[in-house]
Length: 264
Image 1 (cartoon, rainbow, N blue to C red):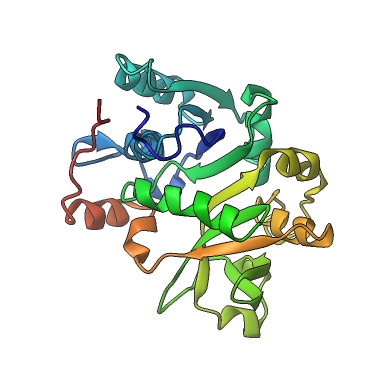
Image 2: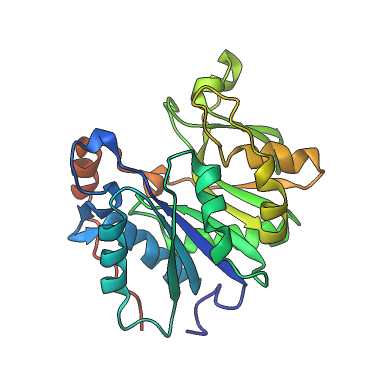
């Protein structure tokens, strides 16, 4: 276990897995749909564990019993490598609210909180390690992982003041024409210093087109307090492809994602 890069980094990962996934047109919780005979959320858990993260909270909501049962069954035998618990988001009030639901399960001694999405099965552990080193090297308080798309429609845009400084993330429905022209997008994966995250997250408001508490608003709030936010740009957008529809699932299945297993 000591060979895993982030084992001693003091990181607690929060995996957002509460959504219903209405466009999936299925009663199965979205994160339990399978790629390579493995549920989506298990791919994400594996990436986190392979990076060396040893404390994980899975935020559940829709179909929570099935998600918890699936994760617990999969995790049998690796209890010495990772501590996994669950937090419930009983109402879907946005990503910021989901992370806040996980706060009680995060020890006060934790240094960093990594936020992951439960439906991105191609996520690589190396990317998570790189995010940690980027935060340290940039002397930042948060890192947002970004990528570039030819067509960024539907994604939050990364607004920068310079290459190393993220000023804001603007969601598609709240963006103006200039911001919509930006191709660098938010993947939804963040690393925060834990102290800053939980001191500030309650300041997030819901005055936006969706009426939700966006975790992305943390960027603006951190900047207002002169706490630096930087970006780690990854050139492989495929790594962050999520599953929002049966078509997305079929597309990812064609990529023949290998079944991931935790290295003992």
